[in-house]
Amino acid sequence: LEANFSVIRNEDGPVNGLITVLHDVTEQEKIENERREFVANVSHELRTPLTTLKSYMEALEDGAMQDEKLGPRFLKVTQNETERMIRLVNDLLQLSKMDSDDLRLNAETVDLGEVMHQIADRFEMVNKDKNIHFDRQFPSYPIYVDMDRDKMIQVFDNIISNAVKYSPDGGTITLQMVPKSRDVDIEIIDEGLGIPKESQNKIFDRFYRVDKARARNLGGTGLGLAIAKELVHSHGGYIDVQSVWKKGTTIAVTLPYSAYKKAGGGE
Ligand code: ADP
Image (cartoon, rainbow, N blue to C red; front, side):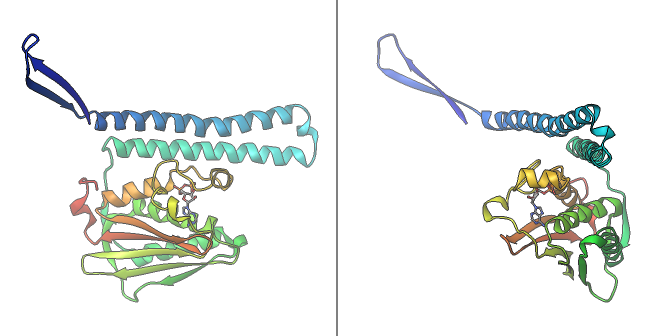
């Protein structure tokens, strides 16, 4: 809040008035600062893979291409970096859609347990090398939820891919589903690296990472949880984290059974 004070007095006379003008500059300034920070972040996030690409391509041109071992390895790096950039741009496009309120939910009634089983099967298959096991603690009966199937799959993909990334080889990830009266609690519990206390309220912010270098090496864009949070909110639900450093992390999603009734309302 900005305040301007003007003293009103008759010429050389006593003070006989005081005008205070209060401007709410904070909100405007905050938005402007966030916008600036966002543009700086995006530029930085794009420059990093581009710089890597440039140096690897130069090395290939300077002879690495003829090297039987280095050639394919360097090409793989350029491929990975390009893919990460594509993911980043896709994530950005999605966030910008959400920002402009362009987000439409195609709600349908789905059996959440079935969806979660499919996601767990897929992750188990893709991460065979890492030998991750999914412990599925679901009720034996179906849990029907009105939700946008693709968007909620993306939410769980983003959360579970983190759980896999930060889990040790052979680790267990527990998927727990607890139906309540109005909503259903879904917890994704890993026994991985954990998140330090001071970082826990920041992991849903755009581009925030606990360990920037490590997260980038693992292929992250820093936008996964920010997108998950927005999508869960657009369903009228909420998302939370509990974590102990070096012990593991639990991400809890609470989703109302009738998501579409609240859709469009945002948070
Ligand atoms: P990223 O693309 O870097 O994974 P996210 O938005 O998905 O971005 O996550 C933000 C950060 O939160 C990650 O970089 C990581 O530091 C931390 N994080 C998220 N999930 C976990 C987890 N299950 N275990 C440990 N750290 C996590």
